[in-house]
Length: 314
Ligand code: FAQ
View 1 (cartoon, rainbow, N blue to C red):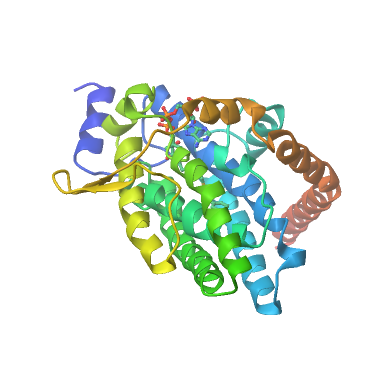
View 2 (tube, helix red, strand yellow):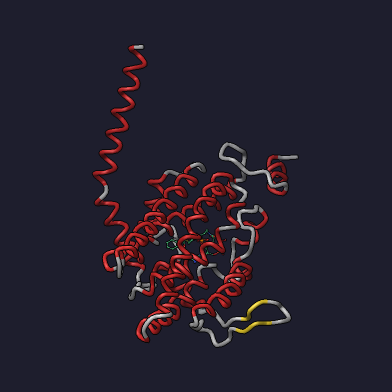
């Protein structure tokens, strides 16, 4: 067997691929692309919710929201570390994000205009993220799979806190109920787009499934998401903004309406409502953090010199 066949046999028999193992260059590149895009999504994803930290309605809500946004930062850091094991540096990944070369999830290019958006993001955006990411705990690349275990635990808490925000609003005044429905209306379709293009228009799915980087296709995960949300919305007493949403007894799944793919590709290619604002915010934060990186590097250098001195003295 050649190296490629040995590699595929490991994948087929569920043996994890680890950083020092031989792997096809395309597998490495696919993982760098997916993991770094995932990391960027977590970091850029802090911005829409960060927008409401100073305006959360109660101290408790504020503490929860701060914790959630910090969790997303942590997820970004685990994921950048996982990608680094494949031979790309964090600086390179950040440069790719800032230059617009690397993608991040389309969902974070939409504005958060009311407090109910914090609920809708938790319920729908984290909900879609979990649907996509739980199978990634079994992805074939070891460091990515292990990182995803902790990330998924935290995302479950995020999803519940979002649903609870909406539940409270759904039982509130007429104005609060309207705010709740409006947020669901605005976040539903962009959340459906998070799963990526339809299977027959997804250039990466087939190969990623063969390598077990992806365990399910974009459409399979999107369908599961619809099936779950269509039931959960009943508890909220709200509506999903899709007149075609209907239980199909034969398929044992919900049918749903057309996704606006033109909008999706428009957002992915940089022309969504907040693309520019999000990238500008990231670049500004990076520039303003230059002194922290400098100080941390100087401290690390000093520690190294001290350790060297001690080892010479011993
Ligand atoms: N947005 O052939 P496919 C979160 C791109 S984290 C932008 O199907 P693939 C946590 C795709 O990259 C959310 N671009 O690609 C949170 C590819 O372009 P490329 C992020 C998208 O990789 C919650 C092209 O389209 N999650 O939410 C999108 O097989 C709340 C063709 O697509 C992950 O990254 C999109 N929605 O499947 C944080 C999970 N969809 O690279 C804060 C890991 C597709 O060839 C607050 N990633 N594209 O130029 C994945 O599972 C996969 O990468 C997919 C795409 C499913 C996203």
